[in-house]
Image 1 (cartoon, rainbow, N blue to C red):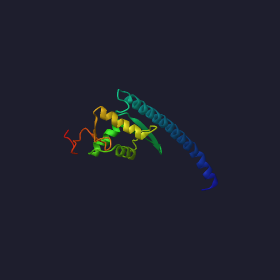
Image 2 (image 1 turned 30 degrees about the vertical axis):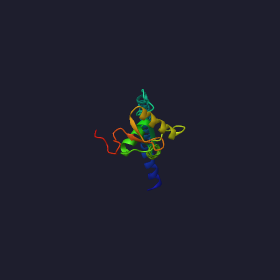
Image 3 (image 1 turned 120 degrees about the horizontal axis):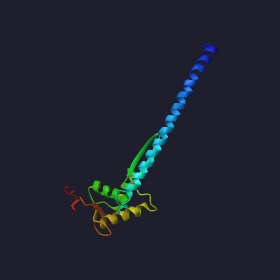
Image 4 (image 1 turned 135 degrees about the vertical axis):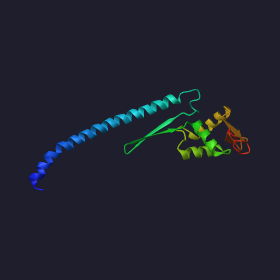
Length: 158
């Protein structure tokens, strides 16, 4: 292509390319605003859902929002009590506090507390005192079990 033809082509195409770029940047700003609004809505709903009489040990959601290459992901992390109860139900057998803690850590559900292990222990005691789970064994061999589990290890029918 000769230099004049290249210059003519650039002069003809450049305004359209700039206009297209401006439109895409405007669309991106619009999407960024929509993403931010959605993030705020998720956080707000999470806060509203977390208030209640047993807030600390019920299904208190912890909204985790991350962005990877423009994709926003929101994951609801259960509260300490709900997560512990779920671990016990899925274990299908009595488990120690350490086993509950290890499983919560593996799932990324360990609470963000000053002492997460103490928080899990407190949640287990709270749940046991509220008859949501069962304490099995003495202080030396304490284990925790789901209410849906019989003492011989067989799950109770629903």
